[in-house]
Length: 325
Length: 118
Image (tube, rainbow over all chains, first blue to last red; front, side):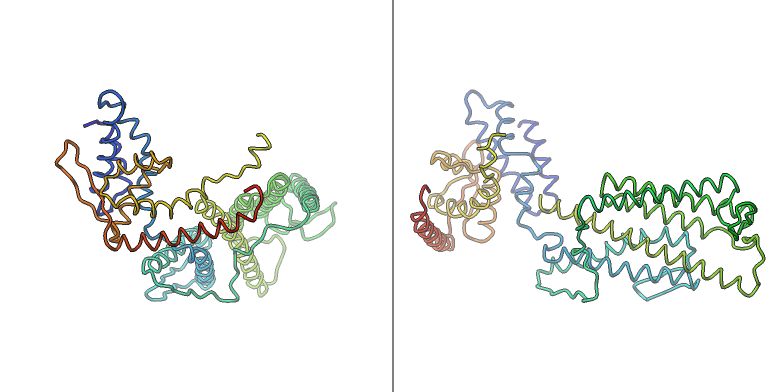
């Protein structure tokens, strides 16, 4: 028996793994190839077998023809729900995460969820994993619904944001490019000005606008750190706008959001004690602290939603293009 | 690319779709006499129609699963051959499918008669 034929059948067998009638299928294919190879001119040779194998087609394609009519992993009718439900589940997950951070409490919704008390950085690291877990849970549920073969009408609330209906900007090409260019120029000017201030005074935060005698808002160490983080944020926005002049890829927004989240996380890790260089009344200080924390967490939440939205849209497009092919 | 090539539609995928139904009727019609897979490929080929070898066998398997054809291995020759034959249910199905096919042809003939240069 030809080694080539055995290797070919072995390869098909690999792709048919799990099928009860695998041996029977392989016997059919073996019989066909042997018949065809024996029929050609001359003797029954390896070359004839190779030719017969080539005519039968690549192993993966052959195996796919046998698997073609089996039930899909997720029925096409339910594919839309994969991202819809993941979005809802992840939104709930994000809210609980924020609650765990703000209230410094463990959350247990037995037996579905355990949310330990989290710090801000831990929460930012936890959210992408939570998204993947949510996607997995929804996929498993839809898988079982598909395999049941029943016509299940899945609910979808009217208030839910349908990401399928998120359309690319409809503005005129040049109008949107000019707006981006103006934004890039403004951000570049702000970044330059901030760098100039930082080079001169080691901070960009002041309590007065007297340029001959500026008074810094923060103590030197904290002022330097926070200024650098904010300048990095300005530079990031400038870079993003400049890149968007050439490409509208959503990956640009994904990278922007991810780095922004990192920068917000860095600001939140800065110690609050001995932050201000000016005297602030003791009773106002905790209020400023909570207001700052709340504002930063709100910005982080908005950025995370934007990040997830873009990842979902990119994934949907890839998913759709794969299923179309 | 020439204008002609640009204007000619790619019928590859559509042809595959059309062949799917046709192959069912073709195989059920052929199996009035017991045949093995490779003999069927050659016979169809001799009639001027090309069937993809790797499409025929999965189709035979599905038809057998539904009880429309039956199979048995013949081990009496040098090489083992799997012979297929049509069942009673297969004959009923063939008859019903041929009716559909003839009706489709009639409708298409009626319509294309009215279109010039077709």
